[in-house]
Length: 402
Image (cartoon, rainbow, N blue to C red; front, top):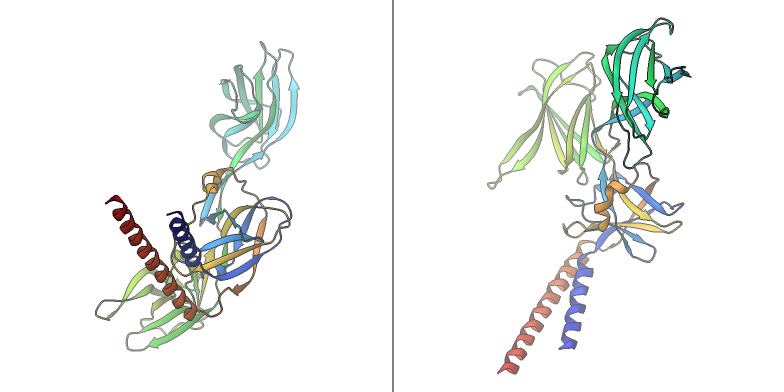
């Protein structure tokens, strides 16, 4: 019985190992210290992955699998940055009030000022005034009450002082400290909000095939890739004529059950000479796409170019210093994504961490399809042996019970 379990277990392990064959490998650049790293995936790696990007692993120099999580650049992200105002005066009045004067350098129109204050557990009354010469002051807000600042995770908190829109050059904040010691104002500033665009890499190995039809007054362009491109952006432009304005559409080819070819419209667009046209997708997973341009009574566009771009992808992993690491990828099947503990701690990883790049790609199995076919036969044979052994065990158990 024990021998049977060991044999079965060994066969199952053999099947599991054999079924996780990878076709490609790439060495990573060296780590300088132990910690989290971003492994920047080159498009030449990404195009060899399956559609759910599950067939990639990180292996150390001993062949041990290293947990990771996959991160893709967003198309854009809204960011907030705290920018400080210059504090040109900080004085203490005789009545115990603290006076802070700040300069609004560009006379921006604002309706709030942010104060970063060391934690405190009292209430404070504030007054705000504005001036264009720092001499003649005009009231903006009185009897503004600041309550306790008790940041749970930090030693300071940002408090917002809100008021109607103004555009003074100078602002004076008076904090009344008549009945307690002053609060510690570290910085005074504002939050600047801006959009940051995602980072792309341009794809290579594409072929453009063009046909101009005088009968339909259309230009047909086929964009073909040698491997699944997973592109996220297309940029289309033409050199001539100097002025043009053309309707167009992007299509994907589909063959129905009867063998008939159909062109499904993915996007309608307008090409014009004022600027390059940019359209966005998300992991486009077909190796070809068609552009159809309506020329009407105009001559066809000349020197049309289509550039495809892929949003940057990274594997985030904790790596040891000065150890050799490799990526193995491009599995035989569509296997499930690895289930690593690190997926539950994504928010704990700092945003700014060192970046590693991949080196040249090498095939792991040179023999290709021939070897792949024999491996699958071996796997099914092993499954058959396990089934026979299970049947044999069941027969023995029934015999013993009788």
